[in-house]
Image (cartoon, rainbow, N blue to C red; front, side, top):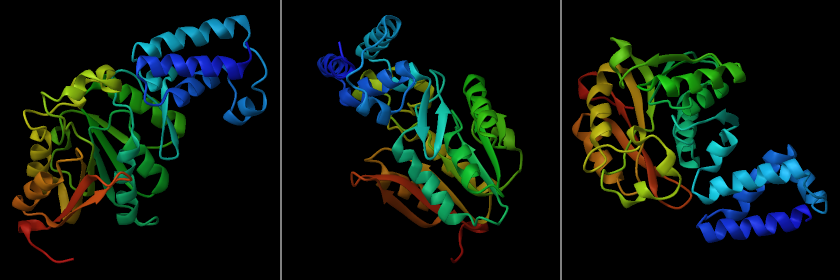
Length: 285
């Protein structure tokens, strides 16, 4: 069969299996097997798989039909301008998390060296994207999982980016260090959320997803302890669920943060909230 016909049939199989991005999933798996670009495929879709390529493609397709994330099947996921390795020990970087990177770049001058912290770094996505764009900044990244940190270290080494990685729970390994900007995509899913049994999250570490009855336990912890680790006028920016912005803003305001606000993603959902902290809990811009 020609590649175009194989791709059509694979798309239909994934649609039946419930994939919401069946065509794209099938194409990514095919390109991985071929070792070619999308442009090559579009101009050579009348060619055929070699027998060993067909077997490998079908094996990947079967795993995807069982729900295994494409990022895990390929071992990587694009984030910002970077290609990051991922596995079952890390969250799969998602487009909405890039909003934290955009916010960071607005607050960080290209030629000014300030300390930046990424909490719950996973694959290193946020820390490495910020370092790639603001090389003068000293970026530190923390994660409680040693397995996740192995992935983050590997990504940093491959990309030639120097980030300090520390193992521990949230602020615990930092002593009394303070930062100009603290970023985090923490767990924020409710323990009883039905989506935990659906889609890619079934294959991601539960500890990086779930945070108590209302999904806000870790966010409360971060907001509570962030003032001890922010320089005067420093910013805290957090990703959260699409329906949690009101609660997160209230948590930050109650903790003394100023200039608290949220931003919407392309679907119109408020997905990150941020605020500025001055010593004593008050200050002006």
